[in-house]
Length: 182
Image 1 (cartoon, one colour):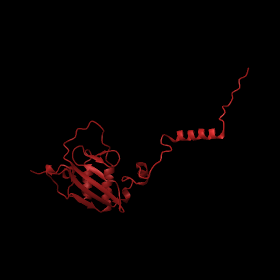
Image 2 (cartoon, helix red, strand yellow; image 1 turned 60 degrees about the vertical axis):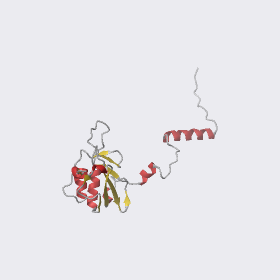
Image 3 (spheres, one colour; image 1 turned 180 degrees about the horizontal axis):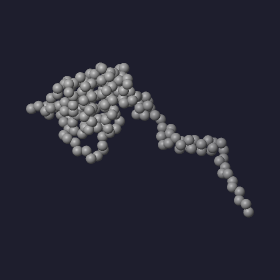
Image 4 (tube, one colour; image 1 turned 180 degrees about the vertical axis):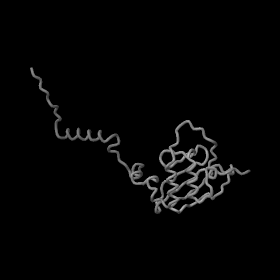
C-alpha cells in the first residue's frame, strides 16, 4: 500500500493573508506594529548626531563648574564658567572626552566626592549637543556620552581640557580645587 501525503488546505484567501501577516510580524520582532512618536528616544537618536561622531564640526565649548557642596569652601584658579571659541581647541577637548574608557561597574574604591562637577556644552554652528558632566572628585564619572565613562585613570584629559580653556599648567588637581579655611 502506498501512502499519499496531502497538503493541508488553508481555506479561503483571507486565511492565507492572515497567515502571511502573522509570519511578517513574527519576522519583524516584538516591536513590530508599535507606534513611535517623533519625541521618542529612538526617533531622537536617529535624527540627532552624536557628539563623538561630530567632532570635526565643533566650534564652541562652554565649561561651567558647579560645586554641590559649597560649604566645603573650595578655591579655584580660574572662573566658574569659561567659553572656548577656538575650534581646534574645542575639537581637541571633545576628542579627549570621547577617548575616555567606560567606567568599571564594580570593584571601585573611590576617594571622597567633594561635589565638584564640570558641565561641558559643545556646539557646532549654533547647534547644541546634549551636555556632558565630568566629576572632578570621587569616582570621576563622565555622564552624557551613553555608557558612563571614567576620567580617574586618564589624567591627560584634564590637561587637554585645561589647554583648550587657556589655563596655565592644567592638571586634575587644578580642576578639583583646593580647600580653603572656613
